[in-house]
Every structure is written in C-alpha cells, then in structure tokens.
Length: 291
Image (cartoon, rainbow, N blue to C red):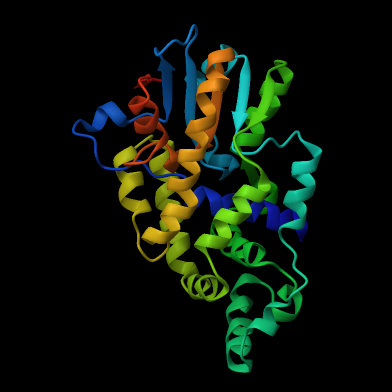
C-alpha cells in the first residue's frame, strides 16, 4: 500500500505540474518541454525540462534532445533529491497521520466517504490513518490508465541515467516544503469533493498524457485550467510560491556548473513561471525544438 501511495502522490503532482499557459503568440514557439538557459554571466548553458511524473510504459518516452541536454550537464536537479536518505524517510512518513480521517468527519460524512472509497478499491476503515496527501493520492493513482507494474516514473528514469553518468544530484526543495504547499492547497473536505469527480479526473488525465506526448503546450494549458481541480489559491500554493523559491536558488546552481533541471511542466510558464522569472532576471531562455 505504501508503494502505491507514493506512486499516486507523484501522479497528483503531475496533475498540478504539467501545464503551459496561453500567453504565447506563436504556438510553435512554445511547443517544446525542453529549454536552454544562457547569458547573464553563465559560462555554460543550463537546461530545464518539463516532466509528467508517472506514465504508462506504452506512453513513456524520453526524447533524444532531453537525453543529450542531460549528458551535456554536470548537475541533475530535481524538485526533491531522491538520493538523500532523509528525504526518502520524510516522503514515506507524509502518507500517514496519527489523527484518523473519521475523527474529522461527522457520521454522515464518514459514511459518504466510505461509499466513495469503494470506487477506489478500498474503504474508510483501511484508509482511516492516511494523511490528506495519502487520501488524495488514491485519486491520482486511479487516473493512471494501466496497472502499477506498467507505470514508469519520468524523473526516476532520468535520475538513473544521471547517476550512471556520475552527475551531481541536487534538489530544489525539501519534502517538508512540498507538504506545506499541499496542506495550504488541499484540506480534507476539498479532497473528498475531488474524489467524487474521479471519472472526470481520469478523462482529463488521458487528454493531458496525449498533449504531453505531443509537446502540445497550448492544449496542456487549456486542460490545466480546469477549475474543478485547481483554483487560484491552490495554484498559488502548488505553483507560484514554489516557482519563486526555486528561481531564487537556481542562479547559484547554474553559475557554478552547467545544470539540468527536471520539474513538473506547469512550473515552466505563467505570469510567475520559471521561464519568465528567469527571463526577468536577465537570462536568455529559449525552447529547444525537434526530437
């Protein structure tokens, strides 16, 4: 169960981490999820790629241009450094809580949640000690259109290649930072409401996979702005605030060595996306097209 929840949580983040906004005037200009960062005193270029955290094997592909950019970089930088044992321990703890879900609900609410969870192959008794993050992970996990054995984690595949190539591994934030963001964005009642919309989530998720495979950034943006799953407060907590913090850390990392950043695709653009924030600091950030 713990492994399933960890996978599900990653998918949850992929939902909030895969959109590119429609501020582009030339669609083709932004039809790429790989970007080069140069200028502003950098001696070597760095790269940023937008990811989809979990995909089915049949949908999974790391494009040659992404692998080439990784090969040319000295650092591999993820949202969280999964080679740090303390971060892995913190990640494992975030799915459980001492305060039972049922203790935070009325009897009628608990009964309703128990009925909802039947659609996810479990019940409230089995899920009662999950954290809100763990409960929401069930929604995300169910949306992946294949069995767990056929799932592939995009960042983990990149991480394996980076380790094999002896890259330095770094993280942009800690698990605790991520937990703080999620707690600001989603409370228990919000998660229960979204669990009711599981079918809509699955349909949306499939459309997002197709758009990601095509690097169709305009469609990703349109899908991402589905207000049923992401409101302004949640976007601020999950994207904007984190982007600002990450961009504060990125210049020092890039200044020392050429770096390859792998983050969820929705962090790239928008008024407070990583790309425009870096551009506002004087960097030249351009998309890399082709394969």
